[in-house]
Image (cartoon, rainbow, N blue to C red):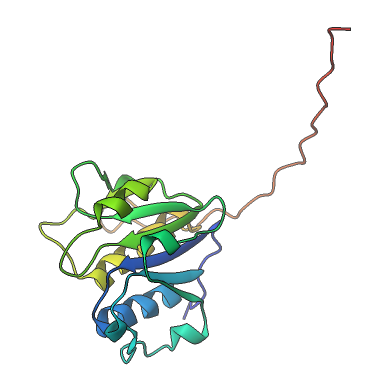
Length: 187
């Protein structure tokens, strides 16, 4: 049985704005732990959300969890892109979205959407193509799976039904690149 995640480049985090249900936060934490998130965060969460009875993997002992009271407090690592997950017309469809190597995905409230201020702060907006809004923990798991599927080192998926998948190609390190200093020819 394979249990290790394939090696991927970069890192990611997942967070949620204004979460109020402990079950949803617990399920999101468990999924983040399972998919290899580097950290989890909340923005303006309700205090009741921190009663994590549904996090059976005890994720908070395995990965950092940051709780910011407001959007002003949100501080991400340098070079980390904030990616909003929301059903907006201007958002990219998740299946065709090129995931940034360093990303923090943020989901909207359980019974609402990303605040306009948070959506404006995002470098990217993506949407999960669905007929209607999904549970926040479910949406988070779909985004993390899509990231792993697109940035992990998996073999290509066969197009035809019952076709055999080719094995994943091993990663090959390229030769060193020599860089020359530019020569000042103005002298």
